[in-house]
Image (cartoon, rainbow, N blue to C red):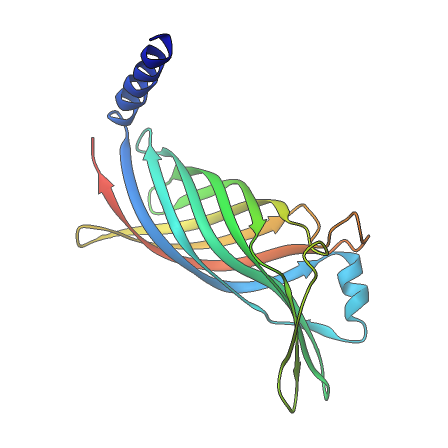
Length: 211
């Protein structure tokens, strides 16, 4: 009976808080530049040079508005991130990994725009891939052994966005940066200090439930 009473109290507390919030639900897609940072990555590229790698993603979010200026925004996304290098006359190399990403963001609403920032956790989904794209011939794809890459990356994300009311909800556009503090390679097996960085444009749509 005590456990049931505790559950009821928690549900009543959550309900009372939720009814005092402005809540929005939405979905978004992401597209942008992804690469690796770190001295070991630069050493690896020599004599190759950094090449563009297209990071993509999609997911959903919830905005919990505590006031007209402040909100908390949990976000869940599926992201494809990595890096690439190339050499003239040889071709291009891609290093790719897919992640389930969860972020807890603080949102500050300004007169025309809003700012977002918060921690993000990246959980690797499936094996990473090393893809060779020669200037002539077919691509060659090799999977990394499961333990070669870090299973979890601790990261931070920060961004600026604009929200425009349209139809029953709002259209959102954001420019977001993502930086992983954890190393891409499993540090128990390698000392390479490659770190994931991405600069992405995110576009989404949200529905508001005013309380």
